[in-house]
Image 1 (cartoon, rainbow, N blue to C red):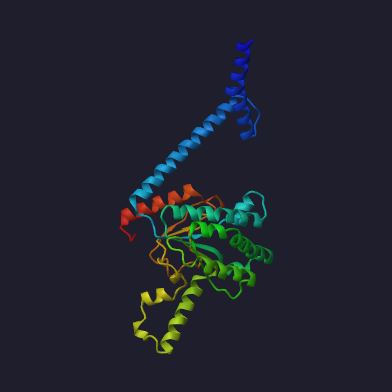
Image 2 (tube, rainbow, N blue to C red):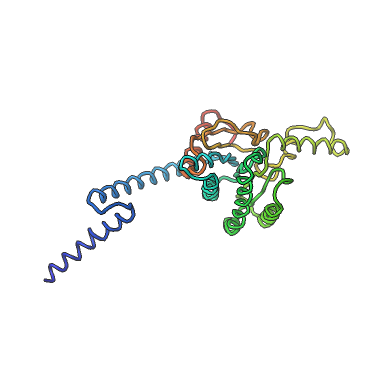
Amino acid sequence: MVYMFSIVLTFFALVLIPGLFISRRLSVPLSFRNILRFIKLTASRNEDEEERNDKRGTIMGEKRLPKHVAIILDGNRRWAKKRGLGTSKGHKAGARKLMENVKDCFSMGINTVSLFAFSTENWARPEDEVNGLMFMFEEYLRSERHVFRREKMKISFIGNRTKIPQSLLGLIRETEEATKSYEGKHLIIAIDYSGKFDILQACKSLAKKAKNGLIQVEDIDEGMMDKELMTNCSEFPNPDLLIRTSGEQRISNFFLWQSAYSELYFPNVLWPDFGNAEYLDAFTWYQQRQRRFGRRI
C-alpha cells in the first residue's frame, strides 16, 4: 500500500503537476505533444538568450560603442493598424517600450540617448491624436519620476515650447530641474522639434550676438554653431549613431546639422517591437562600420 502511494505521489510530482503548469503557461490542452512543445520552446529561448549574451559580451569587450545614440521612434501607428487596434494603443505600446530601451542603452555604456518623440510636423495630425499624445507625455513624466531618480538620469527637453500645453510645460521644467545634477546618463527628448527650426534659432542667436558686438562675424565657425544648437545641453551633442525604426530611410527633419557625420541605421522593425536584440544588432553593425571605415568613435 505504501509502495503504491509513493508511486502515485511520484507521478504527480514528475508528470501531472509540471504538465498542468505547462498547459496553463501555453494555454493549450494537456497532452504529451504539448509538453514536448514547451520543452523545445524553452530550449530555443535559452539558446537565443545565450546568443544575445555572447553578442553583448563581444560588444562591451570591443569598447567601440557610440557615446550618443539618437532614435526616431517610428511605427507606432502602423504597429496598431497591423493588429486591428486604435492609434492610441500603438502610441501607448511605444511609450511602454521607451524606458526599457533607454535603460538597455545606458547599461551598455551609452552616455547620451536622444529620442525624436514629437516633430513640429506632428501638429498637423488629428486633434484627438495630438491631445492624446500630450496627455500621454504628462502621464509618462509623472509615472517615471522615480525611475529618473533611481537610475540617476539627467533629462533634457529640446524643441519649440510655445505650443506645448502649460500643464506639460510645467512637468518638463520640474523634471529638468530635478535631474540637472546627474551625470553619465543623459536622456534628451525632442518635442515639437525640427532640425530646420534648430538651425534657424542658432543662426538668429549668432546674428544677435554679432549685432550687439559680442562676437565678430568673421569668427563664426562650426564650433560656435554647435554651441548655439539645442543639443548643446549634452556633453556629446552630435550623435555617433542615428537609428530610425520602421525601415524608412530618411531622417525627417531631425538633427539635420548634428547628424552630418553620424552612422545612419534603418532597421525594418516598428518601434514597439524594437528591443534588446535589435539594439545589439544595431551596435554590432556600428562596430563593424568603425572597423571597416575607421570613423570617429
